[in-house]
Length: 158
Image (cartoon, rainbow, N blue to C red; front, side):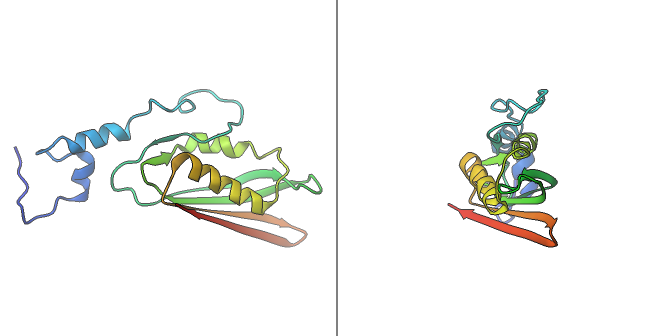
């Protein structure tokens, strides 16, 4: 059995893949592959969903960033389609957002009349409510219509 000298710190990767001298790493690895609470991943889903799904955050993860160039919504005044880019960055605590569920959640905005500012706030609130990260920042950049590009940012912390 491999022993770690007391004056030498354990490399970060051993906390993920396992320290041969302890079972903590194995438990952490099991937690990273626990998909028992996920319903959308691996399933055929042909509709939007109301909430994102989460899985246990692995040790050592500090930031997760998602980006999507095809976020569709509708202008609440004219009901014309709005195309936006969304960037979601968060600092996980115990949970990470599962990406397929996020895609299906964002799909739900395609027929919704909502201002870009409210869109950023609603997405940030969903991530905060379901994953309970330390902080989340959502940036929505609406494609120009009438020559004006709109960028909105919602930053939430616990």
